[in-house]
Image 1 (cartoon, helix red, strand yellow):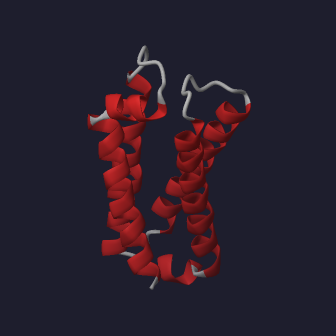
Image 2 (cartoon, one colour; image 1 turned 90 degrees about the horizontal axis):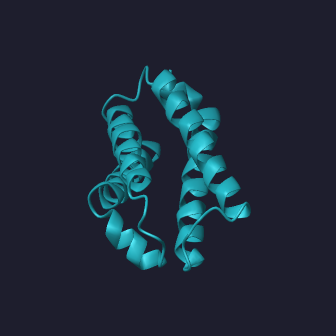
Image 3 (cartoon, helix red, strand yellow; image 1 turned 180 degrees about the horizontal axis):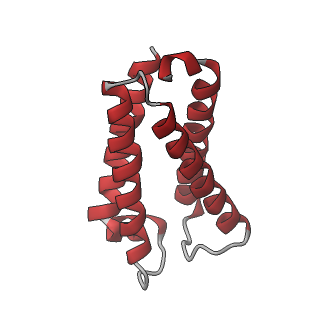
Length: 127
């Protein structure tokens, strides 16, 4: 069940990452935001695809001995999610449709908390 959830999050990350990486203008239109700085969306898409998709897929394929990689993914997710939450509170988004931003934040928060939970509760699987 844990491995299957890791695969699910990996595939979800691939879809989300590719969306930001290759279709950032679609996200800008969806959130009714300014399109002056698309680079940060592409960068975020690359990070999500590279770290979460590839990293979690590697963990799925070879769970034993993957605790260090899982910890790097968790730390990065905590930092990214915290930055999103801070930016939302500080009203740094140019988006007019903040519901989409909030959904993105909640998804990141759920994934981060889940990964942290399984790394603690099921640590033996990853050692």
